[in-house]
Image 1: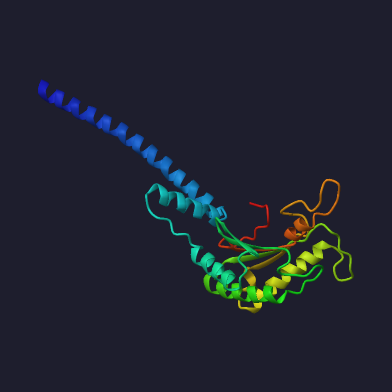
Image 2: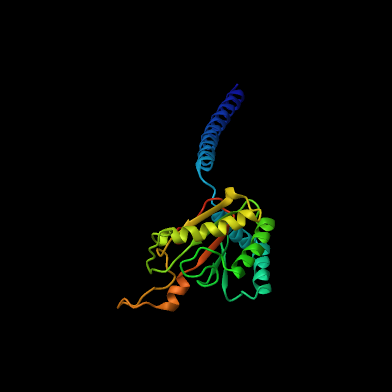
Length: 234
């Protein structure tokens, strides 16, 4: 009789212990489920940032000892080849971005002073660049920025540098569209003299002609992220 009592007691003790462990596991599982649901909701309402995703891929590949393949390598290589063929390697700077590449021209390559008509060499360059991005950057966003120096312009056609820079950007965008790039992925931006690379003038107010020429530029960004991004905005 005493033996049966001990056995019964042990069974109750085991059951009691199992119930306690089970409750803890259920609470833990509920918490993890709630956290998972929270992150799913956050992801659903967030805007994907391809620049951050590419950085994450790069860091993950590095930490795992796996080689990282840059998705813009072919695009950049092809554009460099175009520049070499046209002997414009010193006239256009190609820069690598986290979410694409950008081309920055010098101030005299694309337009004459006060004009929005593409120079013949610039038109030839953009024709070749358009061929490359139509083939290699389908679905990307292309943002074209027009920049001027700080010298004011006053004409019937262009009352200020805002209109001049906007029309220059639109001229390049129209060429890209004519060459077959989807217009829904094109964005012209006229930034006038608001984003100079270098100072236009000395503290005395005297013009620095060389700097003004650098600031009169066209910037073309070929971005995997379909959200337009202006200079200086990250």
